[in-house]
Length: 277
Image 1 (cartoon, rainbow, N blue to C red):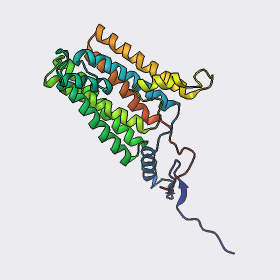
Image 2: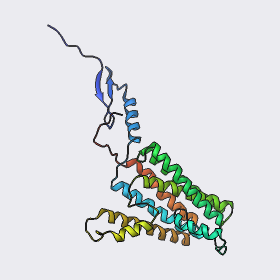
Image 3: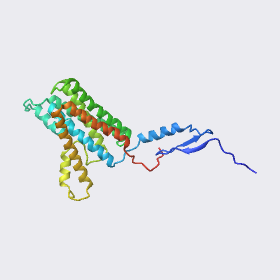
Image 4: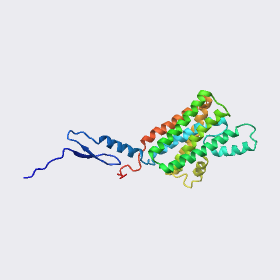
């Protein structure tokens, strides 16, 4: 009579998007448990995040933070960190010397140049790494947030200067952070929530032939985006008047930090499916 023998090791599997065999020894210890956890972690950070309600809420918060930032930076530097349409016009006015000395043409140029540079760098980097990859969004958002914190710290430490090196460094930090944010958001293809540019949203909202329909997701996203940007602008102006621009920038940075941290909570597009890589 033959007898079946059992191997001292037993097999199990890692749960999660990537499945991997786990072997337990005779004492019940999972020798490959750490490797399994590492596999799940690497799969998690490489996930493409899902376009859902949480992502939309994060973009609305970014729009709110952008409104604060521009409302705080314009009174100090007479230029915008994110609204480059206005800066483009102001640059031409300054170059032809018809500004009446109300703003620094160099500061305007720095803002526009750093914004464009950030769009190029962050946009093309996202194309290489994957525009929806969780790890890329975390890194990009963390860099943006750190720059806004740095701008606030400069103003807390040294005060506000409307021109000169301090002003140019501060606006450079804010403009680069704004450019990287816009590039990140636009690459997500959530076209109704740009987080910065309001003109197209106003137009698209009011020319929508279905604007009065009860169920109209595009209208709702555009409207909520505009309300977020407007609320942030009023909040930033209020913070500037009641405290100072450094405090307003700090609030904006905290908003961006919240978005950065919550990117850890976004669902993956491949939830419920197993992947082989």
